[in-house]
Length: 266
Image 1 (cartoon, helix red, strand yellow):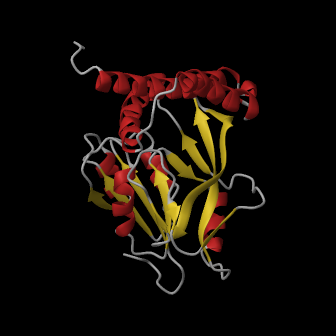
Image 2 (tube, one colour; image 1 turned 90 degrees about the horizontal axis):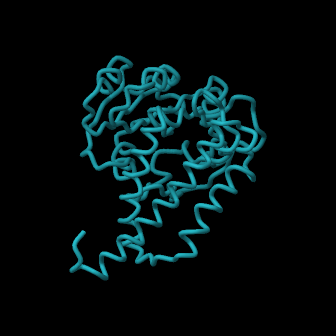
């Protein structure tokens, strides 16, 4: 139920699957919202119980391994004027809360706002993982998500802006991974879904790309984005980012090889 229809209202939308790790902290950071909508993929842990504890409306979506197919469904359940899309491992700072509430009353015709995101690994904020523009706040119906993995939402109505002058702590705080093991599991699972996208786009394997793409990913995050100043945690995450790209293109080679050699024993 929307609390106050006389002003522009804000909903927080969170897609979940076995997200109990810091879900209570996530929800505690958005209790100011007019409504909280949780779209759960039939979690086996206490995710739904935690959501109900915070008064969220919970909807269910088939478990499909990654979040994108459920985004539009979750957003369609919102009653408020504006949506803030979060993951269950993200927190909203008080400074960002104040900015979003004020922005939602803007009269400049903007329908979407890009927000900074700070990422934490092993308890440390990493400069190499900082994102200055993440499209997460928008008017209901203004943005649409692709069903493909790791695709940015598309603006379909109005115009977008961003927080032009950085404001201290006005950011989403992202607690990226629970453990190295969980990151490795996600790498394996997500790169499997990447193959569906490659197949759909008729992506061809390239030895040059297999060699250079992981290398360029490491250079980007470790040197250009400052991972070299993030200590051991920064080095680990930069190597793992590069490893993701290597596994992605190695699986593309495997897929293409098996398509050309269906009679071999594997």
